Image 1: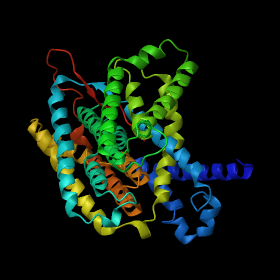
Image 2 (image 1 turned 135 degrees about the vertical axis):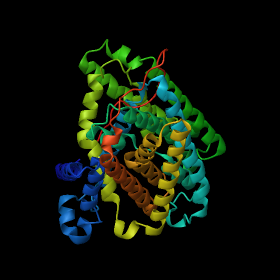
Image 3 (image 1 turned 45 degrees about the horizontal axis):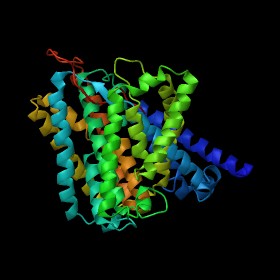
Image 4 (image 1 turned 90 degrees about the vertical axis):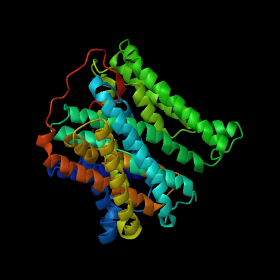
Length: 443
């Protein structure tokens, strides 16, 4: 890479990270999630704002976005996505009191299955042609939209709860455990949608077997592989494999093993036809340690670099990709917003009430789990890359994610006092079961 090209790439990365972090900081000061500000920072640098009012300045500051060498920025942003997914997975096992298990399972089951199932039915009555991507698969698009209607953003809602001082409350634990259960399941479903439109290539298990990735046998193989990866990752977490291995290594060797293992896991998953984002999520799950142990320093070091630079760059690139003036289909976006909020909130509320939670718990759960934030945007990114939806569909889902996250932050802040309750209800005798959950959030 020529020196001038490298300098231009580094300038673009620095400007985007600075804009993302700066606007994210401003949004945190007004009580909103940093991720919203990071995307707005990208919007300012992209065609929506800077490209429209000062295109020459945009070409000077961010030439990669303005039509230069965007591949380098996309690669760095992709690394940010992988760090984000790994970090979410690495928090995915926590012990919960037996008294909470019924609520968690009820809310997760209804709050995920009903929005997905009803959403899959409802989107068939929407005009999907304006957002249909070049893959031209209506079925894959319907699955993606149903997934987005049902998904919850664990990183965003965890950060909101931490900022409000609710991170150690029972309410926070319910939200985060349910959210991770939903996300692990729905990312597997999203992968099936991507598999439906995958084209045969020279690399991968399907190609070696002579099977079209989007065919019925190809999708079956993908579903089996995905379920196997999920089971293996969760088994490794339950057995505390990473803790046992890391205790025998020096900090430098531990970090090398972590990075090398992540690279091998993602490359191996790619060969099996699984997206790199899902592979990073599963590797994160596999490295989770038991809640009674301190977190390993190597995981914290990877997160410190990724969450401070690469992840903001990823969200800034999402904003910079949007041209709301030309891409946003307002009518479809409003339909998606109303449908998503109604289905998700009602389903979560019903699940909590069936578990005999009072309305004072059920309603906040419905609001918090309706935030789609980072996970909704990641789903949109994967679908856009696969050609399932176009720029208009991508813009609609990003707007859905931003609006629901902003509303959750505003509502929870207004009702914070009512959510300050004991972290644990009275514990019945017997060992505490382990369920997927999340220990704390990230920005």
